[in-house]
Length: 87
Image (cartoon, rainbow, N blue to C red; front, top):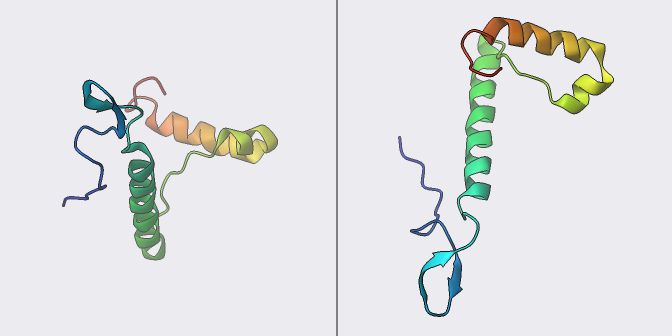
């Protein structure tokens, strides 16, 4: 499968007079983030009706306000600690 994020060649959009390659922040960031989140959402929508509950690590702001979220995240860390470096 190929997903085209429509980023221009060189991944930059700012032209400087007298300088050949374009510069600036990567133009692939925003479409890339959108695409990966869309793929994840589709995956969750596909898994959920089939009875598969994906492991989702809750955002830190949820954990800051909920002991239940902290306990949930701790279970995820315990499950994947030895598989994900620096977790």
